[in-house]
Every structure is written in structure tokens, then in C-alpha cells.
Length: 230
Ligand SMILES: Cc1cc2nc3c(=O)[nH]c(=O)nc-3n(C[C@H](O)[C@H](O)[C@H](O)COP(=O)(O)OP(=O)(O)OC[C@H]3O[C@@H](n4cnc5c(N)ncnc54)[C@H](O)[C@@H]3O)c2cc1C
Image 1 (cartoon, rainbow, N blue to C red):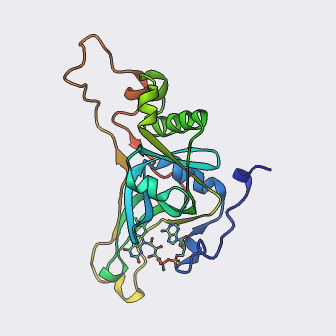
Image 2: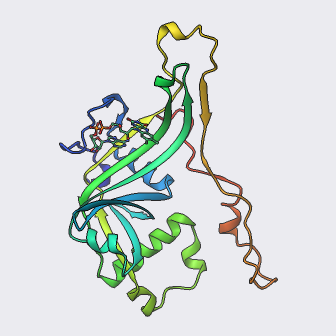
Image 3: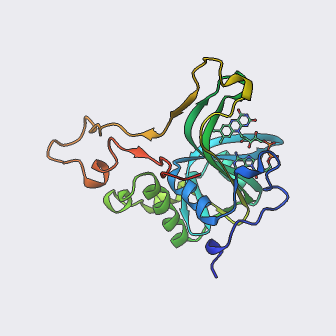
């Protein structure tokens, strides 16, 4: 059995204490959030200070890959250390009758683990392909491949996905019974990441068409929840 077939087994640090019913233990829920998200937040301690930085990522099976400049302080500090990475999908703003009960609909993942710098050239290339194609599927094969110098200027960090939690909120506001007759509007404002129409680089030669892998992304929503999810 592959790790990816196993349910998430909460550890002391991935066990939800608040609103445990929002926990999801299916590995497929974790993968779906990681695949739908675009950015993650890497939490790492740099010189005794906890730092949380946003960055892109890619996934191959049981590993999450982050990349950046080989001078990137957070990536270098994370190497060999315990880190925390989060991915968040905002699905809606939940407006309740009472200010206290306002909330958000979301799917989020928290991953803990020891990050390692990827040295193996093949694994590094595969990771960079995953990061590139995660942002723009099909881009890796279309764009110029990295040179040896560019690869040397790029650091890649791998984080195993074997200690993670998933939390999901969906549905409408939950108000106190006495407020339901208050006449105050309540409901959900759905939210999703939308791409606009593609804007060609002004320096682009005029005879280059928008490739299909860009056209399919343009003017689309990304990562919207499936009907009935959550
Ligand atoms: C978009 C968004 C907005 C939110 N806004 C608020 C807010 O305004 N106020 C607020 O109190 N909370 C908010 N939350 C929920 C918040 O992330 C925490 O779940 C909550 O605050 C409980 O914190 P805690 O330290 O008591 O968690 P605990 O339950 O003690 O956390 C224990 C472990 O559970 C897991 N866990 C906890 N939260 C999450 C999560 N969101 N996703 C995946 N795993 C998780 C982690 O592994 C963590 O180490 C929001 C979440 C999202 C995604």
C-alpha cells in the first residue's frame, strides 16, 4: 500500500483541538487542497525568530516541493529543520446576524516535517517541473528548460507529506436562535481565485499566438470547491 492510500493519522501536533468535526482524515482531501491551491506559507525559525513567508509549490506523490533562489534565507534555514507549511483555499465569507458568528468557508492544510534540500539533479528537475506545472499546467514542456547555471541558482526544498492535518468549513452562518428573527441579512459570499484574460508581453513578437495551456486557464476560476464537498 502506498503512503498516499493511507488516511492521515493525527499526531499530537496535527490533532485539531478546536471544532474537531471540521477535521478531514482522508489523504485524498489533503491532496485535493494541495493541488487546488497556488501558494503556501512556509513557517521556519531564522536566527531565533519565527518567520512565515508565502511561496509557490508543487507536489509529487508524497512530497511537497518549494523552490527559490539559492540565496533564499528561508529555504536555506529550513533545510534539515522542522518546518510548518500551510495551504489555504478561501471558499466564502460567512456573514452571520451577530458579528460574533461571522466566519469564512475554507479548506486548509497544515503540514509539519523535516525539510531537506534536494541535491540530486534528476529529483531537482522533476521538482521544478512539478512547481512550474502546478502554477501553469503544461508550461514546463512549452518554455525553455533551465540551464545548468539557472539550476545552480535555484534551491529546491522537499517536505514529506506524512504529518498533516486538513480542516474544512462549509455551509451557512450559525447564529444564536434568538437572532434568526432579527431582520439582519445573513448568508455567504462565495469566493474563488479567478484568472483574467491573458495579457501578452508588449515585447512579444506579433506572430506568437496564446498557447492552449494559457488559453484554458484564462478567465477561469481556480480551485473552486466541488458541489457537495466539505
Ligand atoms: C481562511 C481561514 C480563516 C480563519 N479565520 C479564523 C479566525 O479569524 N479566527 C480563528 O480563531 N480561527 C480562524 N481560522 C481557523 C484557524 O486556522 C484555527 O483552526 C483555529 O483558530 C484554531 O486554532 P488553534 O490554535 O486552537 O488550533 P488547534 O486545534 O489547537 O490546532 C492543533 C492542530 O490542528 C491543526 N489545525 C488547526 N487549524 C487548522 C487549519 N485551519 N487547517 C488545517 N489544520 C489545522 C494543525 O495541525 C494544528 O497544529 C481560520 C482558518 C482559515 C483557513
